Image 1 (cartoon, one colour):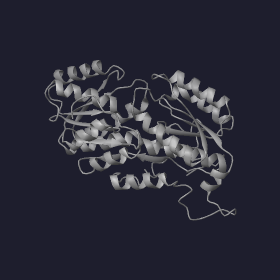
Image 2 (cartoon, helix red, strand yellow):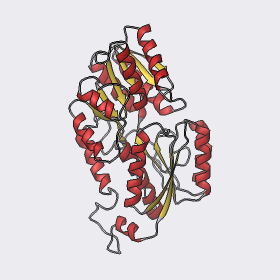
Image 3 (cartoon, helix red, strand yellow):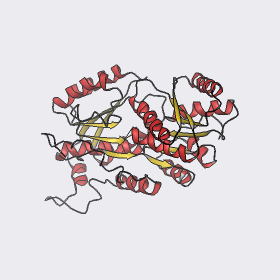
Image 4 (cartoon, helix red, strand yellow):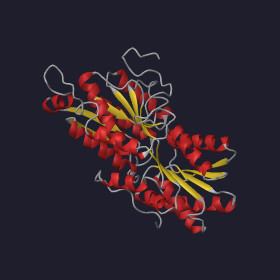
Amino acid sequence: MTHTSRGGAPKHDGNSLRGGILPGRTAGFSRGVAVLAVAACLALAACSSSQGVSGQTPARSAASGPRITVDMVTHGQAFDPFWALVKKGAQTAAGDFNVNLVYHSPSTTNPQAEASLISQAAARKPKGLVVTIPDAAALSGAVKQASSSGIPVIVMNVGVSVYQNVGGLTFVGQDENAAGQEAGNEMARAGVTKALCVIHEAQNTALVDRCSGFAKALQAKGGSVTVLHVNGARLAQAADAIQAALKADPAINGVLATGIIGFNAAGGALQAVGKFGTVKLGTLDVSTQDLNAVINGKALFVIDQQPFLEGYMAVQVSAFEARYGQHPFGPVFTGPSLITTANAAQVLQLYKSTGVPLFNGGYPQ
């Protein structure tokens, strides 16, 4: 591995820990909860038994020292419930680590608007900056400018393949291609031979990567995948588009939604054509609806990237770098964590404990 001149992360070689799990291992619930528990008790600091020369742990030192500001700029849309969990995790870490968290996101998917928000955040000279990079072409310039000015930048959620190119110190989130492959393997095991992969948000490379990984895994088992783009901001129209695709090709026996909004649209479409519970349905990202659908046998699986943990660790890492000049030397993968009938009820209970209501709506359970 080669290290950057700033002591940044080594080049990503795929051997980083996935939520504390070695590559090639499925991230089961027990391991995912273990990671969440570690983060919740301040994994990098407060749970450590070692103390500095002052006799304090880093977390206690942070609490008694000056408050620092960390800006977080995401592409998360206001109507997407996933981001409420990310924000809650970030706010929880901010409270734990004596951070003034300033959170911004555009009201709609708009990489140019996000780039402007990143530039505005950098101009305020925060001690740390957390960003998402769903569109590298549109966002790289603003992120590079921030990192070049000396602001420590942590990339979160999307951007694992580009974070080093823009001066990011590390990445916290999910390898989206690996998540898609996990979904493809599950579909193949369930006998799916022809699948639809639904992308509900334009200009988001993470969702494209999910479908790409999904297609790669299913094709390796002799299956095929058709990618369908819909507008998640218009749920009824999205459901109609999926319904039309299902009617046009009755051989489709599997549907993968790349997020919560897409899952609700897909569920509505499958119900409309009388195939809800018969065509294999899977999704990425958790909601009350998709977890209950798994529990009730109407959906096959949910791939979870643990958004609360993602937001928490991004702020935690940013604060640690700002105060102590230390950060993980490689991506920190919070997913993919596979949720099936074996653990869905437990995961639902876990998310209830965050205090943030999961999205609840879209189609009958």
